[in-house]
Image 1: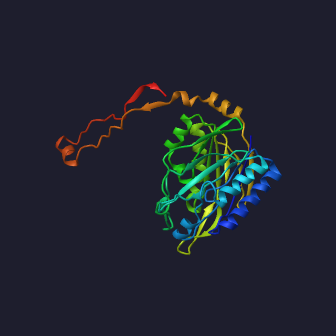
Image 2 (image 1 turned 90 degrees about the vertical axis):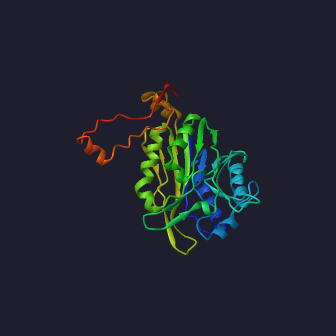
Image 3 (image 1 turned 30 degrees about the vertical axis):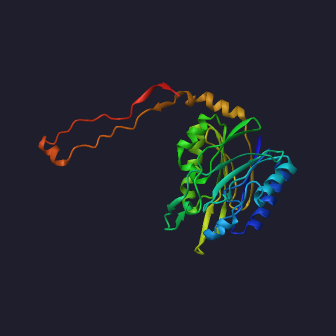
Length: 309
């Protein structure tokens, strides 16, 4: 299966973003004839004030971003993994950060709503509070395309390995992660984490990012890392975007997945940890002194089940 990643520089201007996304998808189709196209997180809207973000959220089905993706999938007969867009929820003061997937007939096959929300203070002191406008999702989503089982995640999810353990338990061969990773965190963590997830779960890891600057609610300029990439199940980076808006493509091969899993049958070696770790907290200094400053060596850890999973 051939897959194309669309790297964008989305702004607080939905009409412009949708035109850019459609143009880049058509460029990918003309140049590389992919079976599946991936867009980045927030392809429809980045930055702006909270009120603007809420107002720009899209109805599903029926909104502008939804209809554009659906039409391209149907006209071009291609799978589209719709990065993430802002999903409006009637009657709610918050929205969802949602991946939507269309098959080559333009049919919606499912959605994934981002579970882990990005609430951090970056090293440069910039504050990110995704939960101020976005509600967390509650479930995972897996679909099948081109003979592959594909699991969904979004951006900050990358830092939570239990999510990928659950996707692996669902039998995925590929994980697709649209993102808008910050420049500061991305330069140190992006490739390391993407390669680690590919190695841990022995899957293709497809990470499609935003690149470049946008204007935040306070008028400040913030920057995303880009470096959209594809890792194979051995953890090798087999495709990477350059530092600009554009498209990068790669071939995914089920035989490669099978070969890596045969070399290291890690799934059959998993054990289930059935209890919390037992923690030795040590004795106080006074207690140690009263016992001639001699304390025994301690062995501690979590019990594990007798059966593998």
